[in-house]
Amino acid sequence: EAAASRKSSGQVASKKKAPVQTPRYIAVETSKGEGYKGSSAVMIYDTQSKALVGNDVYDVKSAPKTGTVTKYDTVQAQYVGTGT
Image (tube, rainbow, N blue to C red; front, side):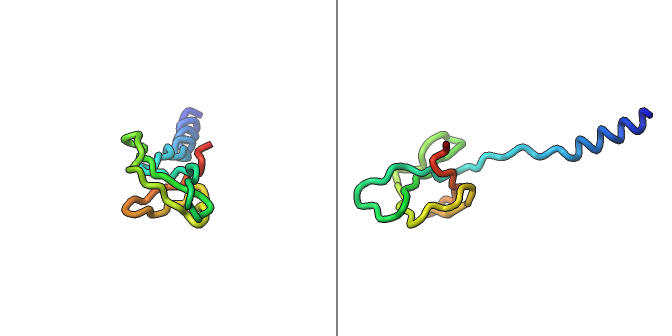
């Protein structure tokens, strides 16, 4: 009985999911300024330093799907939309 119990516990432990890892860079939708032609404007945020990556606002033709990784200049960032 004890052996069966140990085996059962081992099976449960192996099914645990790995913790979700936060991406280093995320692309966050921001308000569009005058002269923007795309459907949305995006800024890049560094989740480790907790700061924006520069002052660049990217004018995107259409917003990527949430969770999609896209390259913005030299940085690859996961799109999170408005973050709400």
